[in-house]
Length: 96
Image: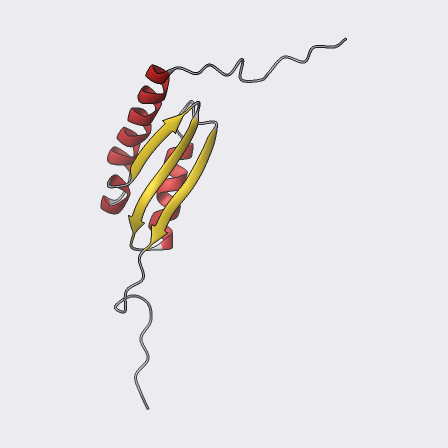
């Protein structure tokens, strides 16, 4: 029987580690993101980080996701960020 060691070690369910990871991701977003990214909601459980909230553009959404992925300890990222659609956004066409 061959035992293959896990790359990340055993999965430890630790509420304190979850809280610390959530805080580290939130702080990274606070210091490295645009204003809408700073307001995202962050939750973490067993290395899985979930981002929730609404941002004005897809670009800002991607910034939030990429910032969160850079934090050590994030095994998986769940992106539940919504992009707000308003009439004032995007190119406008004038009637001819």
